[in-house]
Length: 229
Image 1 (cartoon, rainbow, N blue to C red):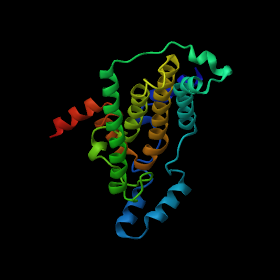
Image 2: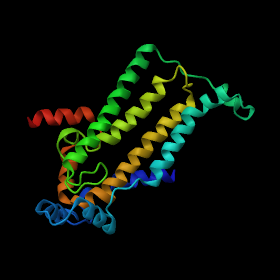
Image 3: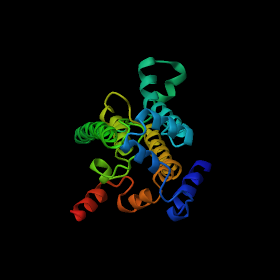
Image 4: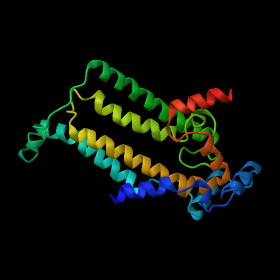
């Protein structure tokens, strides 16, 4: 309940009430990079000193571990024949039609490709030749459709995998719970990242970006992109 409450608190925060510099905290770094006064390596060090370097949130790590345990523990029980895990073998399994399995495989491939493409775009357009850290707000390519194409693609990929391999790894109620935990955790981490990192880095520019581009809604993002053209 506390975790859910925290998510709701972050979601309810009005963007205009967030007390960050209007121009953000990386404008000077982007300008110095463009002039050749600082190298990408030096800027990454400064980002760390300012407390705005990209980092993995602890809840994301825990969420991924919980997802993996819940989704794959029944399979471990099945193949290990450990008595202590025998109750997991008796859990009812959800059988998917082959059409759903094929769709899951397609989504998994799509998700993997999108992750790679988004990472490439951050390296190419982010100013620091890094997949993790950027000083330029990227609003083109996949980032012109949704604000977090890499994270959204990772989520789709992981959930699709649980369906794609369900013939060999039993898909049980634990898998459903695991996928829900994954979605909630990633959504929470994205809210934290936007509020505590992205808005600090780019200020009003990111606020405007939030108004123009959806967080994860790929369909809405494509529709908005079409209207702009």
